[in-house]
Length: 292
Image 1 (cartoon, rainbow, N blue to C red):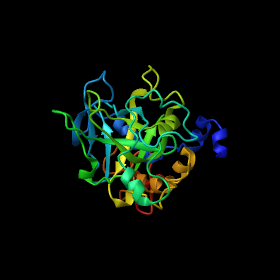
Image 2 (cartoon, one colour):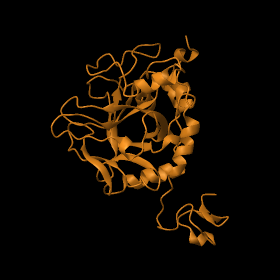
Image 3 (cartoon, rainbow, N blue to C red):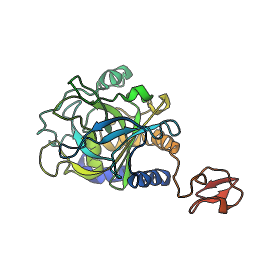
Image 4 (cartoon, rainbow, N blue to C red):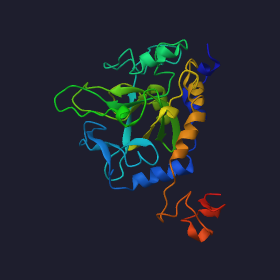
């Protein structure tokens, strides 16, 4: 038995939580005050059955930051539901997936995980931090989106901002045409628990998901976003150790995101002569506007 299994999961996940970097926080806050995505790659997706299908896969920063993210109108982002697909059971399984009648025994990257030959056949939602991203289906009129068409590779790393904290996860599954609406905003139960506690589950109760559209999901383009067989502790056996193995790559990837500011053209990284050339609290250091 892992020693970690003797400690309540919510205490362990609080250790894994990362402070949101200033550049990501600035980016998040800017999205929360914006009207809408100006360059949607695909739109018409639903956070839940009670809203209009107005959430988009946004490409506003595809060319400059190399990212794609979920965004709705009027400052809304996405919500968070629980995914239990993948390997079932194990010491971290506390039963919160047992009410689900849509759980699949595999994830969308099972073949990739098998190809790594690391001792597991697929992701386990109770142990691995992963995100459900992209939508597929063959139903007439069904909205779809394949992130690979925009340079995002399967099994790549993603960042999730939730509950005033940040976590990393693998793009490990996709939304299929189950149900009557193309949904977005879903993560493995281990990541959902890290974000919002053990009330998150695969059940249909009123408090089993996080319904507020304030969660930011960020996917990164390029092969450098894929940890591969040796870049993650795939056999960690628990969320904390697996997530810890993603932090080095995740911290590198989020540096792509530049802090926004109130004075366009004078944000972090722009050329300056004095601090008066820099927006907000930025200062001029070595000819560049910076935070220090």
